[in-house]
Image (cartoon, rainbow, N blue to C red; front, side):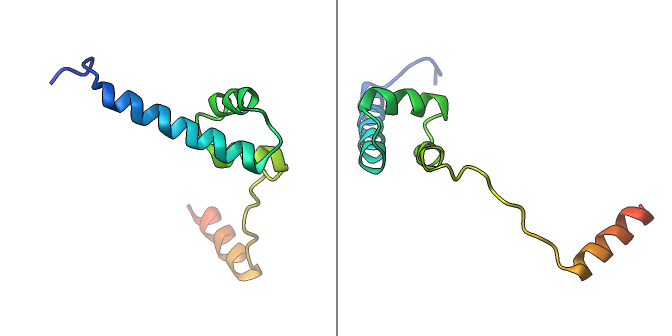
Length: 80
């Protein structure tokens, strides 16, 4: 099977999925379809990342460790 061979139905499915993503983004934000498409390309077609960027909630916080967890991780780091 040749990797370069492409089924036209795959292209149609990909276009429909892109349209769904664009519709989702335009409903959740005030982006136009053109801006939404640019943002999708910028975020590698991850629509949730586009929406998070729009809302300003991109920063994922690390879970804070309890005192006990921190003590044991320091001990492990010191020993190894």
